[in-house]
Length: 187
Image (cartoon, rainbow, N blue to C red; front, side, top):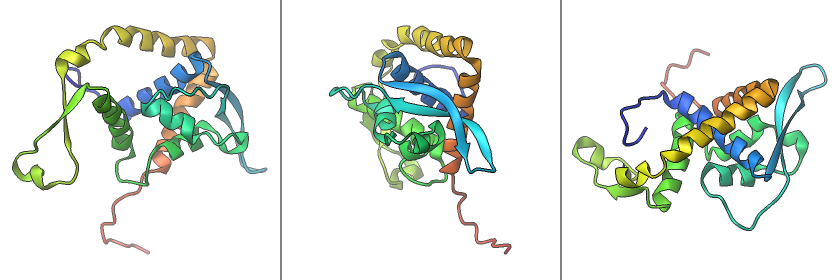
């Protein structure tokens, strides 16, 4: 995590970030989360679904904005898995990193990061380097407990929905993963 000694796995971070975004939107009355059946007549499974309750003129930005824009309004196609799939911009080799980049770019626009110079061999890579402004990021520290409490309240209030939310977030991210072509076609 920026400006801390805490190291987390990117996949775990991405899952918690998306779960937190869904939970925040639900807590603020912008969406509702429910369970239902997804799949074909023969291969049905229980899944988490999202419905927009209120569209505010104020865009929350970040992952929350991406989620709101990815909800089609058709309950059949608005499972959490499908919405997460639509939040991630492209099929890629690192959809987890794409989700982290969405959040990081939002924090950049809010002034928590600044552009920096790449050095060494990586300076020739495309894209910009974002450097965290640790003094600004420290101001976000009090919100960590509230975010943890929000996720815990969903987990305690509806454990089955909480488990489905995480499972479907994972499935949505995994569905965007495309392994790089290694040239070893075994077909």
